[in-house]
Image 1 (cartoon, rainbow, N blue to C red):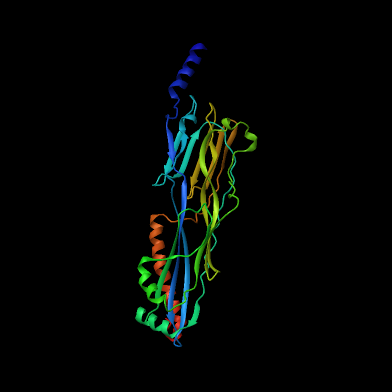
Image 2: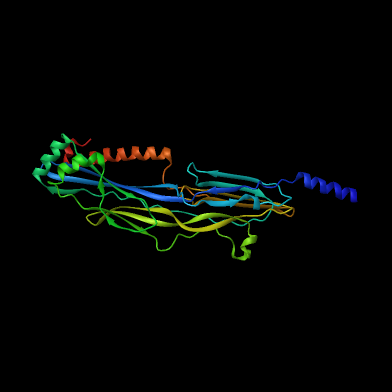
Length: 335
């Protein structure tokens, strides 16, 4: 019997694999937004100005290069555990996904969701101004004149009072030529931040007791919702809600390993740092596997490939608003 016990002990010592003493670092996300209004100006046959305003609101997520979050992988396993750990980052250092398989305990899963509000296209303004129409005809060479206005919103964690835009550099010539003969509508953008942060839908159970026994903490940023509104003459013409990471944090726990059984923990994050999939699994000699997961379609800012599509979309907006203004001004020439 002593020989058998010695042999088993030798096998356990030879077969165990501990997690390397590595500390994984990753940056929280930061949200910014770019607001544009594409304004198309034309005249009908009776010298009535036709001004069409089309808003566009896009958000972008990058890494907040302050102090990074840390995850100490060496605390996951014990002496008699086989550990499988995978960390994945976005290109700028934000956490994209984390997967671990060790021996231990698991928890249940709840779903998370985000909502984006649709954009509203602003209607056309019509005035009567022969002098202005002559300038439009001269400036546009028979075609509608386009002006693009911009707002750059660098910090969506703070409310922004109604603010006038700047004229995009490539359109200043047209704006300057028309500003003395056209009474442009007042365009403004504002940012309202939710009074309370959006709920975190995956949290440690209240019955787990001492936090030190829950596992190894994976730190994530809490989020709130910033509502960006665009108005023309104080009348809303566009609105969008953006998920915004804040400086407040919470933790999800990757369970510790134990001698018998197996536990898996997996999480995937969108570009805002919001969990889009969370999975805990547990197996033991007395129970079958328990796996739960929830997935969420991401409706957030584009990656590099999608940003190219966004630029194409802006070009399409200019083309279609030009066509709309032309149809309103010259119905017989509408195509």
